[in-house]
Image 1 (spheres, helix red, strand yellow):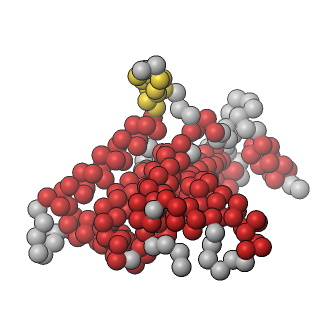
Image 2 (cartoon, helix red, strand yellow; image 1 turned 45 degrees about the vertical axis):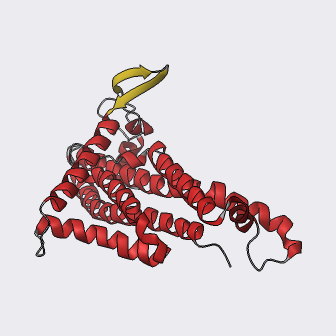
Image 3 (tube, one colour; image 1 turned 60 degrees about the vertical axis):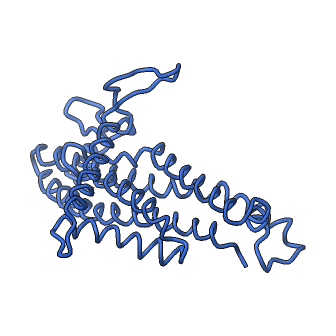
Length: 275
């Protein structure tokens, strides 16, 4: 290994260990200090930078949708076209195609879910924000719990409690001898694994995307100012940061779509009993 390679390895391994060393990102990124603290009925609450980012994202998407629908016309303008295209994607591609004829009443909920996740995901590449609230596990978990409550409620309402839990525990076509093994797995899958994986999938993708962007961005800043041959590596790191930003944009849209499609799939299983 050359002396330059040794030096580069020392830079990347420093982790902020000395003055001027490379300061690697840590999970502290996801736990910013509280901007405000208060208690309600003995329960402590904190407002952090990530909380404010979520409020901004939610307000922005609500404003966009209200403006898109405010002066609807037969020939849509740009905002109306964007709003209608997004809603049509959810109504036709998810509520109608995935759930079926009974799916249209769920279109407003699915659209709200999709746009909320999309807006908050998008904050991961917005300058000055540069972190998605969905990269904290608590927020995807709350969304998954809402979905869990909804599809179980709909399943019990549409099928009756006895049939709903029976279908969840005993899949059609399974031999009776195999039920001792299959039934616990099916119950675990429907009532525990579904909401957990729904939350983890969204959280993990946004968490990993944020960390990758931060690593390449901080690496580029440090290497470009380190002197010697390091700016060459800095250019490569900066290029990767740009490429990862475009890749993150794909993840932003894809994860909002996947979360909503899976929600529609679970609702389909709730409104249509297994045969």
